[in-house]
Length: 372
Figure 1: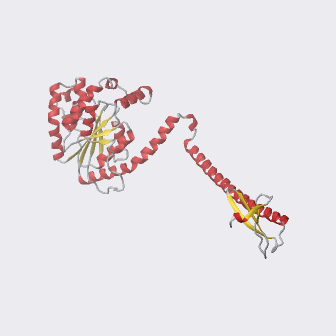
Figure 2: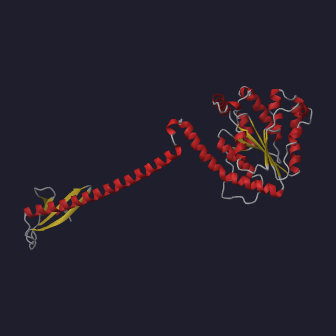
Figure 3: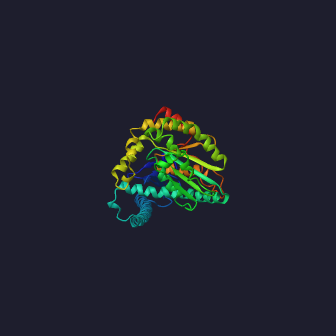
């Protein structure tokens, strides 16, 4: 319909044809816009329908009213749907809110940071469970095959060794693993072969022994604090690789984990130990010196990693500023050390290269900075 063929009337939206049809007469149309939509309708003819101007106006108004009414009904229906949807959302939110309150209890009295940290721990623990199941399978395989495993946990103070050991052994059969954390040597032990007191705790067939610090005390702690002579330190550094190679050659599965914490994170953990009554027992005089002696420990660490990693007994470096990720990567390293039965291949056993890194990468990082 070409609007150029029509002329406006005195009433908005009402048009009449310029030309008069010999049989039908002139044609009335209505044209208007409502709710961003344009409507056009033929109302009738002056001769054919005996349509007067007054009749055309009434028809136009009736048509407009019907359009507006339909639009309003549609709008009302949509609004009712939105209200219903909003009510459903509100109902769901209330149900969720009530459920969370029933679990959290009087959470408003708790420090938000403590609450958030506690909730995150729940998710972290759940993420570890699948790998803890695999550790049980590994333990069963060691028992069946009569294999022996040693896992060494080394690292600076507050690097997360103890927490990792607790997570790794959480669901293991305690009849077939032992955690060894040796204190100061006795006078008798001081006069024995240095490695003798560690060998006493070595595993038998089907057993895992986890050393919370190991013979590598002689590589770092003892020379720094003067607990051994320079000669004793050098003898250890020269002999330990051959000793470990002999262990592996005789069937021992030896895994060496070094938990690498940054200086800033170590300080934060020390501060927490000092101010938290539940952790104050962890803080010792040695801890007080750890930050001051950071560079000395870095030098010994660098030398230890460079000289004592080997193909048969390599060091695995675990960046431990994030405790959860460090524990997860430690579990992966242990699980990847042997081809045990029933492995769940749907799990991700690939190393997180930001956390589980090579000795070469750690040594390169240490040459650039002593933060680790």
